[in-house]
Image 1 (cartoon, rainbow, N blue to C red):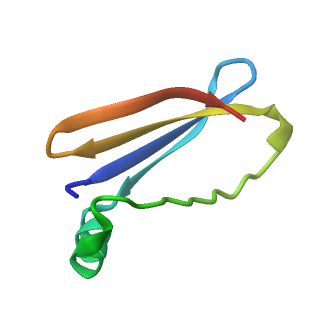
Image 2 (cartoon, rainbow, N blue to C red; image 1 turned 135 degrees about the vertical axis):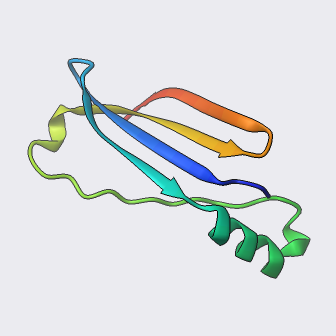
Length: 79
């Protein structure tokens, strides 16, 4: 309920970084939980990112979520 920042880092098949996005989500999470207190902390995040260039070169993404307890990372998730 205290999410503040979500970061997405995309990687090419050769391991280089293709791009990254940091998104401030503190206000959106606060509003969601204020309106959905009965949810018990369950949410679904769906994000779409535009790709310019050859999308077949994208291999994976790493996501991190920062809240009051600290930062958690997924490690690389392959497509």
